[in-house]
Image (cartoon, rainbow, N blue to C red; front, side, top):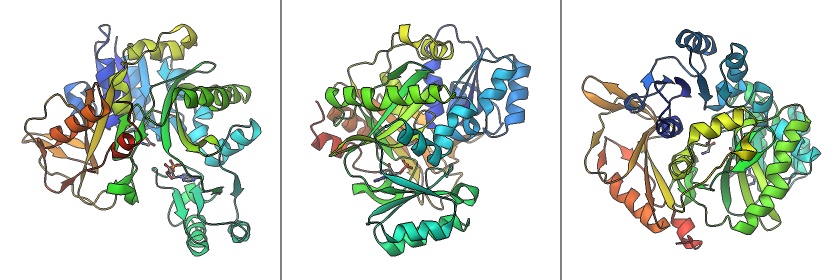
Length: 423
Ligand code: AMP
Ligand code: GLY
């Protein structure tokens, strides 16, 4: 069986390593893949947003199944196009991907179906947004409606900052079309939990929970990034909270999407905040999180491809999905300057990294060896029987990696350990 995986980051590497475990899998094509993925898949230099070329390639190679991992091709309708030429896919259709593609759509869905989330208002006009803002308390949260590479969220501490953010977004300079519409929402507090869930349009099967660390620097300082490290499971996510999320958020969301004629098939990501009033949705993503996938998938016991088939065929309710009762920690190793300006083409050297799994995010293979090709360069994941064991192993492993200007956060998992860590 030949499989196509669209994308080329750490998340895609984690998906591919998991798919490799299925003995029926012959060739995995990664579009575009990267320097490390090349060891596990055949990489083809076709960008994830080059929909025409991807469809041509899939047809040419007669692939048996496709996994579309990143948000933008999902939102642009790649799954619809592949399915239209008879290639079964894991991933939502364009209509279902709207749950991530438009924050105002997601907020109105939650409002209509009584799914707990921050209070909000949606604006297409700057004047109206500013008038509304003047009556709100700070801090307040301003979000660009569309995809903005995870950077379309501003938490404004003062009225001045909030107004500046609205003007900045709505005048179209900063986020282009994604910012023409803004969502202004209530600032919530509490620990954050990421829950990825398999969905087949009707059934939702949550995976093990995780915790991301989104800011660039220790102590949650610095700029927002795509994610600097993750641990799983998340100690704040107790069985009681999980049951509540299932009843109040997960199943209602999947039911709501089905009721709207947008059945969601694929991985639905719930970004949750455990507020004093209970769990609330901060955001939905229509895909695996990155670097959440790099801690969740290594703990998956069941064959990933079998689960993906079950999602595609609407038989997830009968499909076993189990996780190892262990802990994982992923450290993202980034290039100096990320998430702003950073250099590329820096040679990467590996020494002793113990048992760490190396997920490549931004690397390129050259005739001289591996070099950096992105801001987030590698994810090092360690699995252990305790959270502390997984964290310690990951920090030992990172000592064995070197490139000029590399940096990583020193406190991945620290808050989780303080919270009890369940081991
Ligand atoms: P997002 O891109 O929607 O995940 O937002 C990025 C980060 O902004 C989240 O992980 C939260 O830490 C924070 N955030 C988003 N919305 C809110 C909110 N309503 N209240 C507090 N923090 C928020
Ligand atoms: N790590 C957050 C995301 O994938 O959006």
